[in-house]
Length: 572
Image (cartoon, rainbow, N blue to C red; front, top):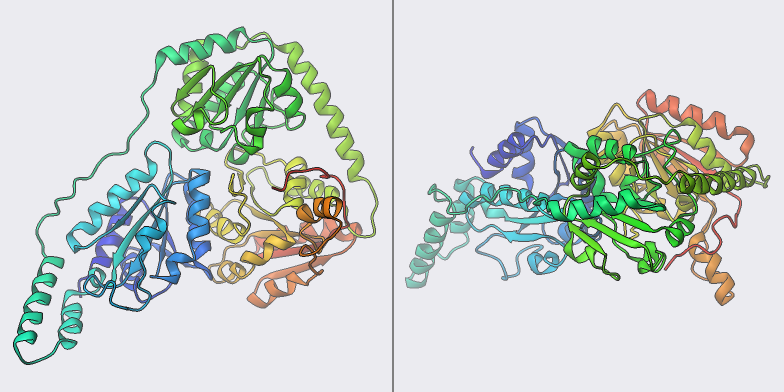
């Protein structure tokens, strides 16, 4: 029997969407069946929020847009945190939500709420479809909007009566109407007229708009190039936007390498450069920014991560390249502001200038980099009753593959990991972004492993953050997605506890227990290990890698000793 879910499945196939993430519900069943008919993988998660996190990861790592499909009401409301996270991380994704029948909206139908009003401030577009003929054009426009300009999530609401076979919907509605009398005749006439329009085969009047691209402003590009080539102490700061344009990513990386300017990375830009790149630095960014004469921010807003712009030398020439006009001028107006795609802009700059003369500056930062690395190496050798968190991170860094994808989900432990674990490739690091969201781990890992099954996927969990998505090990086991998760377990919300204790004299609300998280994973069918001393750590991590290669999702629960490595770090 024909239904619009079959058309949705065909549309996804045409758009090279090979997988969708969902938690089943009667409002959306026809879409899932339609996807199944087209051999599109249906990945059923245990919490709707994870479906959006998984879709987010697909969009970040591949050329395809991630798609999450959830049922009406609580199914949609459960996604709000992940949708807001995607908005702030500027990740394009498509969320489809079921809804009450068009004839029954506002009448007390099951799970009927005003979903559009709820989500419209968190997405680039929120649309409810009221006619079957408009479903596919609306989905096409939604995807194009998600990918245009500043990327972001979009929401399409599909009422249940659009999705099921017309014959069943007519029968359902007619059976609920009174049978006799003038009122009955009117209601039958009204319902039939509504359903005739709902299922009309007339051509849709919705026009499909293409993806909007940025225009190149050659005058601004030339000004920025001239400023960079004249600089003696330039600094580049890279953010998420540099990895979004997969077509230009490799050309962008070549341009940055050619320019040989001291470069710092954050978010998804981690992994773009490594030890072999003498211009790449991880440490002493504050020193570099305070002493720079030219600072180029590439897809990076001057928010709390850069002290709202105060961390940058007030006399430096500030060049901002950003897809967002808002972020271009946030907190400090740049001397040169270019509204555009950072990857394309830097590719153009790399074509017209050579590297500036700044070797002395590179040497200065290199000396400071080595000093900090030596300090970290010394701290990693400190002996504790349990496992030194820096030692754990160093051990993971030694064992990850060159193509491993690292998923960061936590506070203090993940903050330590960002200093000591280095992704080896562009698109090798997934973190929530500026919203600071906990709970991304399971969903991100599902999306990453589904998209790139040959690559090793690691989740770096804080013990607090792990509980948000530990149930997704059921999803990983059912769908045979062998990821490796490490829990840095210090029985505490340590990033909060450290400063709270010092400033307010109490640990209230921050204490956890050394729980046996590995037992949970074993219960779902995965492999679980517990490590409470450094003597067995390396062998256990190697066993985890071996288990993953055999197809098992694995979790290693590592009991950490407390460390002051990140004392003074920002947690608000």
